[in-house]
Structure formats: C-alpha cells, structure tokens
Image 1: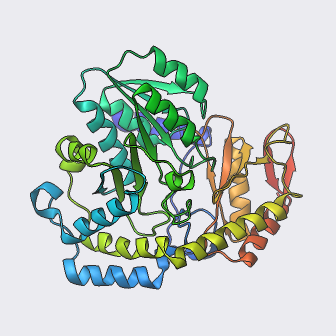
Image 2: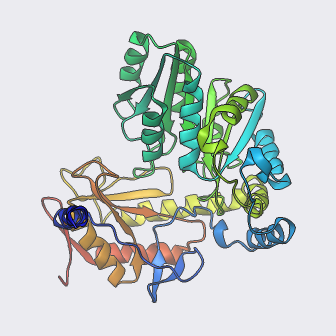
Image 3: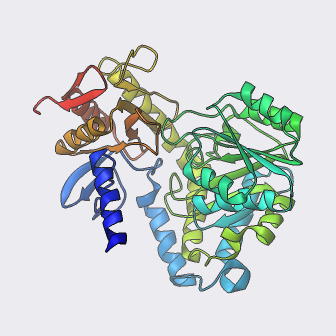
Length: 413
C-alpha cells in the first residue's frame, strides 16, 4: 500500500495548494449554450473560436466521411492508414500555404501535442549538435517536445527578441531552432513574428511557429498568424491545430517539402501511432472551405465585433493591465482570448464558481499552466456568441466584488 499512500499524499498536497483539477461532464454539443453536469451553462471556456464544432455543413461532412471511410483508419499512415481523405487534406493545406512557404507541403497528425513532438524531434534528430530556443511562456507540448528531442534547450524571456538575438549569436550549434506560440493560449498576445523571422534568417535558424490559437482566427483568409503579418520564408515551419477554430480534431505541419519528408522519415510521434479517423480529415476539408471563404470572413468580422463590445463594456468594470497596480486586472488582446488575472489559486476558483452559480462557465487556470501568482479566469469568445451573451458575461462579472491583494469573491459570499 505504500505506493498508493504516496499518491494519496500527493493528491492531498494538491488540495492544500488549491491545485486539484476537476472534470465537468458536457452532455450537449460544443456551443455557447450547453448542458454541463445537468445544468444549463453559457460557455466562455472553449476554443471553438468560429463556432464550427456544431456547424451544419461540418456535421454533414463528418457523417459523409463516416459513410465513405468508416469509423477508424486501422493502422499508422506508413502501414495502411493513410487514406484519400488524409491525402486530400494535406494537399489542400499545402496549396493554402504555398504563397508563404516555398515548395510547401503539409502533413496531418492526430493532435497538436504530437505535432510539436514530431517537429522538434525530427528537425534535430539528424544533427549531432542542435539547440532549441524556446519562449518562456510556450505551450507544454513545445516544452515537452524540446526536452524529448535531446537537443540543448535555451529559454528566452517572453517576447524578448533582443535576448534571443544574443543567445543565437553565442550559440555554436550546427542546427538552431527558434520555437514560439503565435498566439499565447493563456494571454492572447501575439508573438513578434516578423522580428523573429528576420532574426532566424540572419542567424541561419528555423522558425517553428505553433499557430494553434491563430489558425482560423487571424489573417484575411483565416490562415493564421503568418498570413496576419504576411510572412514568407523557406525557414518557416508552421504547426496548426484542427480542433479549435476548425471545429473538428487533429493537427498539421506546413513547411518546405524537404522538411515534411524528414518528418515522415524521422518523427516517431507520426510514424508509430495509428492515423486519425479519415472521417475527421474529410470533415476538416469542409471546415477549410468555410474558414477561407466568405463565411469565414463574416464569422471573423462578427467575432471581432464581439471583442470590441466586450472591451468597451468591461472597461468601467475591470482595471486593465496598464492601470492595475495589483490583481485582479484584465489582460486584453486582439484575439478571442481575454484573461482576467486574479492571482491567487483559491481566489480564482472561487470566482469561477461564483460565475458558474450564475450559469456562466469560465474556467480558472492555475500554476503550472500559468506562472505562480498569476492564476486567471481564461475568458474566450466564439463567433457563435451573440451580443446578448457578451452582455450577460459583463453583468456576471459586475456581480462579483473585487478586494485588494489578489482576492476575488462573490458579493453574496
């Protein structure tokens, strides 16, 4: 029983620090209005930024995909699991990113987590001397991928291009990779991609961009951060996820054809796993048509309108990052991610529960996902939300009372 006793003690320590995670059971499709644990909730926690998870065209495509390809792929891509749907999806993505990446090719993977592991391991596997430079606030999948690559890992301060420049210039590594989130998932801030790319080209380094929270949302055609800032380079390696703005599941990597071929030959996270169900890839093709077409432009316009309504309406309720001497304060961004930093782990969970009591589902995020002392309500918006939904959230926040010293409680508490 000693092993179980140790685990029990570990869980008790999480409870004592206010860090125990708890799942909630969702009984209806992903959408702004859902039934969660038997209760009606207005959801401001999902990454379904364009509302495509329940879009009728996407649902119809998924059903069609099941009828064409069945429930599963049956094997890895390199055995017998690479279907026509996977091939069509990769070809479509390569076509979309060809204006930004010379000789573009794309590779589909099961998840964004696996895609980051695949890229970082494959691009350093053939080099006996490689170094990865990673932003301090990068996603856990990047951190784990860098560690598993066995390359030397150097962390640079968040968004600090000058420090990164100095680190690159003193590096003696034969292969250098700079890796960054495009949109930081807990902040909503956009990385300085043009400056990073210029630096990488000058120093002979790859720029690996995790566009999980930019794809579908940023750019005129919804192609994400590199379209948003109009990047063009063979040094670019782009990862995007298909379970957020695209509304389905999976991930992809877009890069020069030689890079993708190296992933096919080297990336264990791609080679040694069963391919995702082809029906998902078939559905994503419809998502791509929506994202890059007139519907996508209209959805992004509505989403941006909601963000403007939110930021104007909440301005007199919550202090901004610029004028807040201490938490809580609102971290505004140009993306659907609009965090409210509370600070204390228990306080943020009290705030989340107080909102839940009003029927508002806003998840509390704590360390280690965010730095210690910056626990926050991660508020996210979807094009499926309405102006009334946003107004209800603002009123819900106004019903909370803020007290100094990083504490937030309900008025009724």
